[in-house]
Length: 370
Length: 211
Image (cartoon, rainbow over all chains, first blue to last red):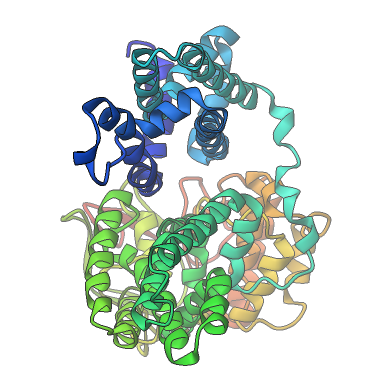
């Protein structure tokens, strides 16, 4: 990559995007991509080889031939692109990238858009792979229209994103009133524990929404997968675990916010117990919908340990960042390992014990590092 | 006033500061040193916001590690480049610090007037310039009844009118409450603006008193 601007943009934007979204992309890959590439055929012995191939490629063929499938694929591309636009727009507000506003903007508009288009192309690489596969399979099965239009659609999303970023950097007037976004909450009390909640409302609404959607989606999938076990405490524990791990990226962002915006709070005279209490209040508020659902939607005997597990594990995920530092990859590795461990233990019906253990471990980490 | 014992700070296994034993008597100290000599690291450690090995005690009794809350109530800090959540107003931050540091009601008014901040203190800090943020950080550092105020590069980005105001605050605070000051600055402090100012040099990863 010889263009200096492209090289810098890839380092400051694209790398961060993939680091921050490793969790999301892994989930997307596991839930969508694998089935998209090949849908498992349950009993292939009673069908011909051609039928077997067509069934296996059913999802991808649907996405290039049927209106609903096409809409789903285009919608996925658009949703992913909007997410990337949102990320980059937020990233461009960072203090460390302000130099771009007085360096890259001296280049001709076309050159800036071209550099950003490369970056946007890199951000859309997972989609590119998905669409390339759809195009090849579609053409092999003699579907022409959508496979030929898909590259143009992706190109449009890429150039559109690039033009948007260039506009953000060049048009300084669009950012003037952004910070006044929480004017309606001007008179509300803002104790230290609540500051990340306000940050979520001010600039992390999409991340919060996606977290809640992932949380609700995993719950719905599990309830559908085990229709006869709704009274089983282990299932409720599993639901709590899925919700907790669905919030792992939000916990990462909360820690990042604390490190960057709240270093002053470490000079405030709060005892360690107060610091732990602040974290409990923060995550209690972030998880309020799930906690209320677990407590109200299930008998207390199963709902209470599950709610405790949800809160305890989320606090533990946050506390793990004291060990790993603000590094997404080791954090996610640790989180996945912890999830598998807790999942296995939960199968033995140890939900209450796990809730207590997680909360105590989190408390010990807060106490030690807080 | 402050005692550093077996103090050391390392980054990735490399020791950047090592101070075996150093006592600050009450007074005003100007810590000097080249860029990267560890001035900010030392001041942040004294403020209790960065981890280190060893101990720092205030008045021989309060350890920054063992009595952290009590220590922080008496040791205030202003960062070189203060950052606050953009949606908070200056007033909200003042209220937060005043409550946490147990400051008397209305204490901030004089500071706000001196630095002509009353017009914008109700605005979100995201609208502030770097100089306005710096002034806010300085006001926050004077709230409560501190025994020691740590100021990292307090003059950077301040306008010319604000510098003598800050010096006057320091002199008055020391005279009225016996507060000590530790500050770092690459800018020359006005001659005679801070009576009894003692210079310290941070070099070769340790703190030296001038010969």
